[in-house]
Image (cartoon, rainbow, N blue to C red):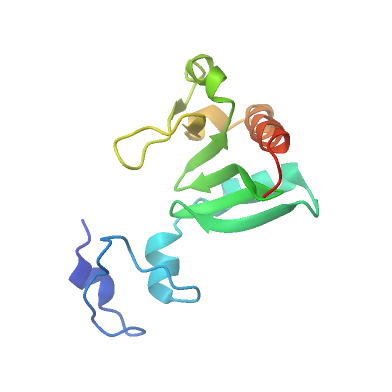
Length: 146
């Protein structure tokens, strides 16, 4: 397990104390931020981008220690580590959790309603990934733009 002193000690950055929040530094362009905060499966991100295609309503943003795809300002899907993040209708969450590879999205000990993580086994096939991405895009598309 990495410790703050080990994470913070790199040729590009001086040793510093962690921020008061206890979260890793999130400064755009920071080597620490890129290495420690934004660790996600580039291959899965590429597959998601290919499915989504070019759309001026979509934007990518670093969130949750990974990459998020937002539709009109609302997160639809993302990639965190090796997992796909999918935003869905909270009323469908229990049914969706029965699908292979799906589990609640929980960063703090309190699962977020309507947010799921899908591991590699649940989105390894293109049709499975397409189904999950479509669910996220459909739900985010029904939300008011931000």
